[in-house]
Length: 613
Ligand SMILES: *[C@@H]1O[C@H](CO)[C@@H](O)[C@H](O)[C@H]1NC(C)=O
Ligand SMILES: *[C@@H]1O[C@H](CO)[C@@H](O)[C@H](O)[C@H]1NC(C)=O
Ligand SMILES: *[C@@H]1O[C@H](CO)[C@@H](O)[C@H](O)[C@H]1NC(C)=O
Ligand SMILES: *[C@@H]1O[C@H](CO)[C@@H](O)[C@H](O)[C@H]1NC(C)=O
Ligand SMILES: *[C@@H]1O[C@H](CO)[C@@H](O)[C@H](O)[C@H]1NC(C)=O
Ligand SMILES: *[C@@H]1O[C@H](CO)[C@@H](O)[C@H](O)[C@H]1NC(C)=O
Image 1 (tube, rainbow, N blue to C red):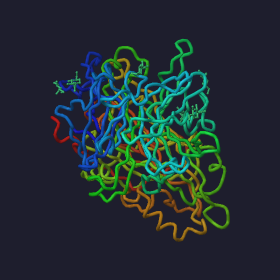
Image 2 (cartoon, rainbow, N blue to C red):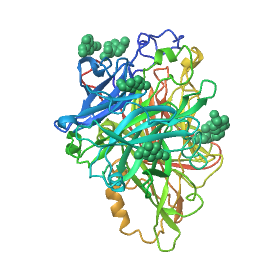
Image 3 (cartoon, rainbow, N blue to C red):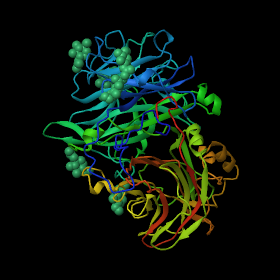
Image 4 (cartoon, rainbow, N blue to C red):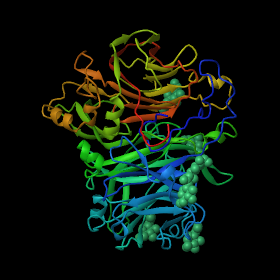
């Protein structure tokens, strides 16, 4: 089986159905076997001795397994047969091991794992728990997923020595809201951790602004990460960013948080007021992956000195993996929840940085509490601003390997009326990357424009942008013919918001800025035949709507849609028919869409060369 560069085996619900005939109508699939595989990504680290990056994940519900990579392209099991790196069974964790986090140069200079046991205790191997219970007097909704990190702004705020280790533990307080608890290491052997307070918390069930750009803060947080970012990647001195997994529903009868999830990010400022605890205050909050099944992102510093970065020339980076869950959280009983269980995948490795959006017209679209912040008036006339947001890219090595597959192009096209138009050529497999840019001449309120993929006479998945709520939509209602013979195959739509700003070519002082931008903008090596991702002109006048740049990754039953280096939506797609491989232009409603730089890299590489096919 070909799989993309994720840290797990990709298993679809059709696994076990290989004897089926994919040219005729599907049978009822509810009897397929159950396979248990992976859970939250966690415990990643770059081994300073070997320069190899370890990517871990909960495995079979009782331990952590991990894979190694020296290039972010190929992954190898650390233990034979993908066996556990750490299992339950010691005196501190008799029942199960949950998400952990690693200090690469920890105890005795060795990589040291901090992990959670039994839901509430944070322990370290072979010694009693270093943080044995939640802070006294707090009625916590959860207290889990320790994440260890270093941060220059925290060190300066607290007058700590440079490079002090901190840990956050995610959770929340009943009736109050979600939050994260901050600790600092105060002993050379990492055995003593001092509580510094709940440095970041939000009211229960509240939203950032009206919630349009960041979903909801929910009732409890899990698997939070903290890291410093610059325009190039990770830095100890970078600006503080976080990723946070949100549990957003609350059952007042059982007094428990569960079900509906979101995977968000936040950026902001760390501060201490005299006599008060250190705090983190967000100034922008967004969604890290809009997919309803996307959850539990786990990132780690991948230093410039790693094998992967030495070869690619990359600076220090923060590499994050998102978990695409099965239907375990959907409240579904029976098929497919039982078959899917923990059967799911980690998504493509992503590198994070601060993304500039220059030359933005300073109008109402900018002035909203959103997933961006205004950093500067970028010209003398005061008509333009520069925005900043979280940049999210497929890790450059992974992207290069994926797009090295044989590719073909499709001519530019402008659509002005409803309908579908097939590409001249279809990919040969369900493993491909489709990239394209779409320009809109107006914010036509009824326009929906994009692509149908995995299409045939009987099936199609439609991915389009619509101005009505500034969303990328994925219509899965026709994705799988199996939905008509087997109940429980999720066909609900997926969507996420991305605002296309107004861009001006007349923003005064940007003469030098362009070059600098080119150098910093990771997207520049990501777009075939185009120098600038964010401000391609559609030719008309000096002001135009920002180009929508799509990178659509299809890895059999996993679909990841990337847009403008700042948007990702991942979901499951499970077409039945073998010939459902066509790509089509799609338009609905009135308006005009111009497509350019359309290219398909056909066939992904095998990310696990040592595993049986
Ligand atoms: C995993 O390793 C343990 C020993 O640590 C061994 O007993 C077990 O058989 C191994 N399982 C697999 C699937 O290789
Ligand atoms: C995980 O479960 C699968 C299915 O039961 C099994 O084949 C595999 O050996 C298990 N892995 C380990 C490390 O025990
Ligand atoms: C946490 O660990 C301590 C010390 O081992 C133990 O006394 C306590 O019962 C544990 N708490 C929970 C909630 O497991
Ligand atoms: C402030 O920090 C102290 C520990 O130094 C802690 O006991 C207290 O609960 C914290 N206050 C808040 C509001 O988090
Ligand atoms: C959470 O807020 C939404 C509105 O944003 C409301 O519909 C819902 O009832 C709230 N849930 C609880 C448990 O308060
Ligand atoms: C946008 O509108 C569609 C209906 O046209 C809806 O299904 C979708 O959930 C909305 N997207 C967001 C992100 O709110």
